Image: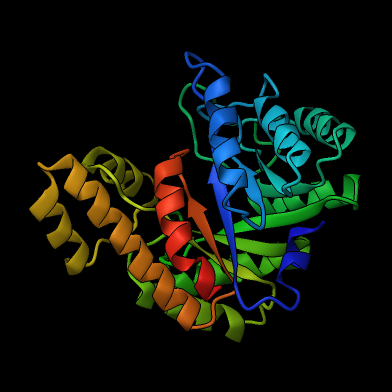
Length: 286
């Protein structure tokens, strides 16, 4: 099923993101995690692109296929910044051969170890290419509630987002954020510009200090006072920080559901304990 069709008649959906294991880890770790996720009945599970931004070993496709075999819809992340058009065609053919037709099309982060190939400069270029190559693929795209780091303003970023939708993106998943008011401002601006596809709010439960420092450095998400106070109070108490981070995410999600968002995309970090705690609390509200 197309991901965009998941929102038909639904007040709010809950979906998960997982990532492939690092190359020094057993593949069985992710399959054990997915087994626990199945019981939580997510609307779909997206799988990030390879390990460390590479997909040459087809691990994303393997995990997506496993998810579909479990009876759960899935979406494969696909980044283009370090791929040529030939590379992308090979990946698309591999995905199609395994009946994986939902793709989250992304530019991807610039990796100094893998110089850009310049066949695709932006995610919109990738979306256009996929649609022209095989229109049967259903395309999702990313969005930034606090503005993409490469854009000068949120209005400029939303103009680019509208272009991605015009190119064929049928569904959007947001980057993580910790201040719901920023997401609501973004959402109002996006709708005012005619972006009417489903938009999911991306939520990441913070369970350790290094995690948040890494993620904020990558995406530039701002930290509201309530969040920084929580971090300061529990940063030297790992178990307490984990529980406080889960509680903070639950508060965010309850507020988002109450405000009528299309969906919640939970960045699980492959942590079944966190996903179970959150899902068990919010499931009845969906």
